[in-house]
Length: 243
Image (tube, rainbow, N blue to C red; front, side, top):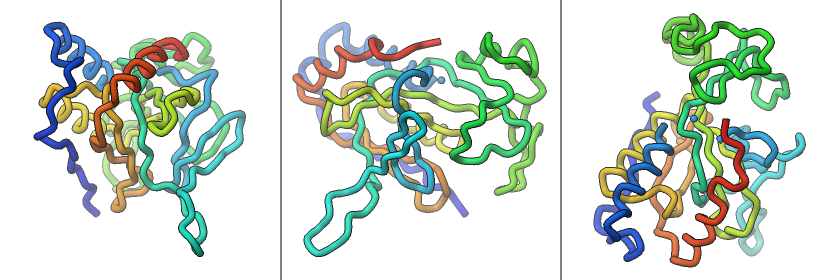
């Protein structure tokens, strides 16, 4: 089954005036580079995509996001999360489980890295001193049960902090982009970058790929208003624990 790789970015929407200043281009490039490159999600709630639905996870509890019910019809799970990217860890994080990770499991990975370079200091069973040369981080160290192709036993993940576009006064939420969605995220950021659009200055639509389980897709929704931009910028980096 072929995964969709379409990146939905309009080409005819002009940048807001605040993003057309002489220093804006460099700032946009730096912010998008960080977004394309792994937020340490610890201490604040996160978004779960368990069972193909968006949930808010805090303290082990899941709250499923629902769409407003139409008259005479039941409420349905939300299938498009409109979000503002507040921040991003510039590195790819890494997690290693010796077997297969079970979705929803509370078990800690055997080894993990928040900076994608070396295992975290509190990891007991480090697989290697350096991620780049670790045998678990090499292609072919594991065979995918879904595709039967060679993959890495150590999973790459991209961690973001987001706010719901409908309520920028809400608490920051962690969003982990798993290995199946990283390619789509990278293509989205490159498409934004090619048009000079800063990822932190827009609302991003996050949806599920109907052709692949647990895979996310990303699309441009709209620019933030000046007021929304100021609010989002005030939170950037303040509620997030970087490695």
